[in-house]
Length: 153
Image (cartoon, rainbow, N blue to C red):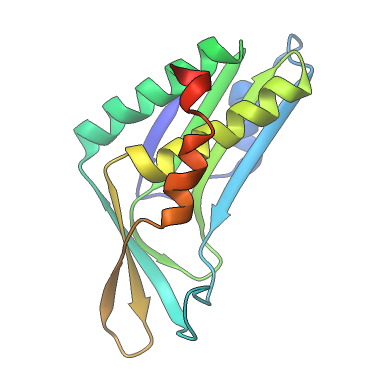
């Protein structure tokens, strides 16, 4: 299941969508809006997320498909919010489900790493002075993707 939405989501409801007796393991990643920027002393009051939805859905489907086949997952759920989000709000949820924990954990990490690099989302910090500042990709995110190169090719 893949969703791009302006609406908040409920963890328990989403977990029920992937829950099954065939799963022995679930791995979750939940990203939320934090107030401090690790790269500076700036404080933010929220974020604004945009996406090219048609392209983003295609890219997310490719990532999900790779995760399902490489790690033999039973299910993979990806939800990403767009629009204005306040501090503490949920941004992204990834749930991977498999028979064994190693597959679920590794696949979940792959999905979130791929999502940060390969999907058409644009993030802006909403600063306390009412200005908006685009967030650029980090070198660290690109480096994390290198570890998946041999796995996905």
